[in-house]
Length: 426
View 1 (cartoon, one colour):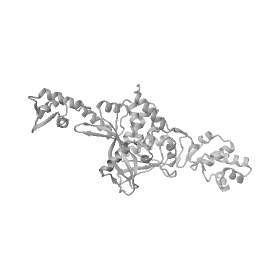
View 2 (view 1 turned 120 degrees about the vertical axis):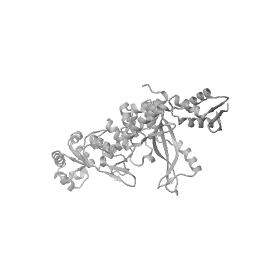
View 3 (view 1 turned 90 degrees about the horizontal axis):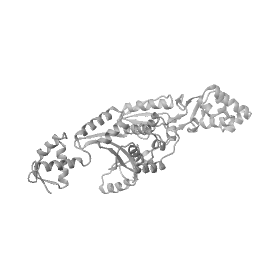
């Protein structure tokens, strides 16, 4: 599909700001004090080679910058080796890093790791998308990354993907009663890998990160995998009686900090207006990138800032950006190109698309109502019931009649004479 020039330009501008990341992660890329367990024979061989080359354990300890007792424990297989120490040992004795990689059996809670970690597969893209949505990689290096969702299927799917991409690990999902949400914690080494691949450490609303460049530049399968996970996590389907409904995705972005305010929604109208102007100048970069990805797949989106602002415990004020997909054509394209994997959202989307057969898009409803009014009016007047019959005849929702009557009244195209009787004003 040939992209619109405007979409191409906006994608190029976005890519220029997006993170250039690593998508193939080796053991030597990880946080320096992650412990590495390698096969016993290779560990003993490396340590003995270092002692032989240096002349003694004491000299090796000075070269590697560890205590002599640590060298003894390595030799006796009583202690695993930190990443930084293993790098120094390999460099000292000339042991290839790739050879070590083939002999690693455990890294900081991750057993039989699938090194090097490849983060470009559809499963890996979904993992990264999950942690850019409902997941969190802590700023503190030693803390465990975690994922929150009120759907157990989302947790099971993410755990299976992580085990496929990273290796075996122990896991437990807890239910937090007060928040009505499930939480799963993952090994910290997975957090290292995610951070290297473009998932920021810390508060995403505050940092306002970009989608990693390799995903923006990816093929259709890459874009689909990313968007599918994001909409499973953050998206929703709203079904509305009159307008039909829409798919909506929302993300928060910190726009200000005001001390002395209590944790709550902003109520003051003047402050709301000031914050609205500020938020228009600071878009959420993730949702903007997701809008561009959808546009590149031929799906038209409506992106806007909502008029709700949240004050946190520490005084930061967040604006909420929303992305909408609402025409039948784009909803069908979304279903075909991206889709939901969660049953409840998928079923809602099917219902929405089915309902839209009886609704209108954009200004079609207004034009339809005007045309039918001209057909049924007598002496510039018409009955509500007659217009409703025209809607029914065209297999449209009868309830839409009052919706468009009100719109036409607001436009001063018609006015109400008495109950059920309207008159043209033109």
